[in-house]
Length: 271
Image 1 (cartoon, one colour):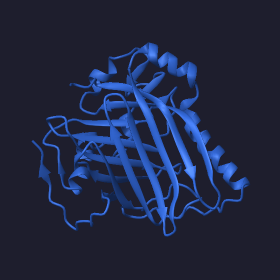
Image 2: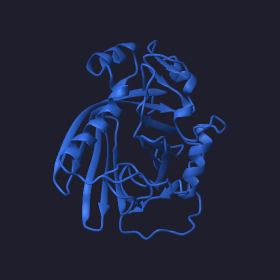
Image 3: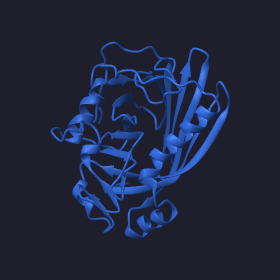
Image 4: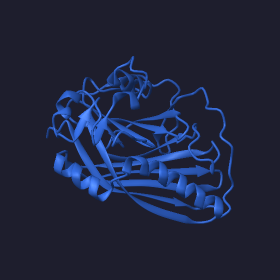
């Protein structure tokens, strides 16, 4: 089955904190998934959506990957996947993200899916972005369509968690639903879990209008929700940590649960 050049995904995100007190909240979300090799085709799908131009919903390549404009998105993704021993053999790469809405956008996480030519999912890049303008990529080989991987935590995201411990990533993707789960572990066990669960919709101007009616400020809303929840944590007495300098390491390899890390993975082609 050939996927469209771009499509929308609607659903919710859930965050649950375990310590030093339990707190959980849920937000509605809308996301865009786009084939990075078919940007021109995606640009013509709906009058209220544009690629590299301002619109109600917009995708701009400079918001992702190298962010410099000097390297194509595919080259950036292939280089990162190769560090995890993944060669897609020219298969599709699709990016699931929070696009710009009415000119503004912030994507706390973007998920890059790398497929073999036969359509099998082979690799995933979790591109994390904090509110200080910094980014980090966690890269994982993906054998089945549903599995878990772990990676050392290397990047500052929240002032309420130290940059130590590990993440556990879980992913499930089908034609009807997509879920991503990230659990933050420290020496005492799981301390925070974030998940998103979304369902697909065709990218049309009608669906964009429905998005605007349901979530008219969703671009700014992501950042507002982050700071609002941070304020509530402060009022409840959560410990605040100053932001550390970003580490030089910008790519971390994830590995299947219970499997030791390989020091030098060798790229492998997929038929």
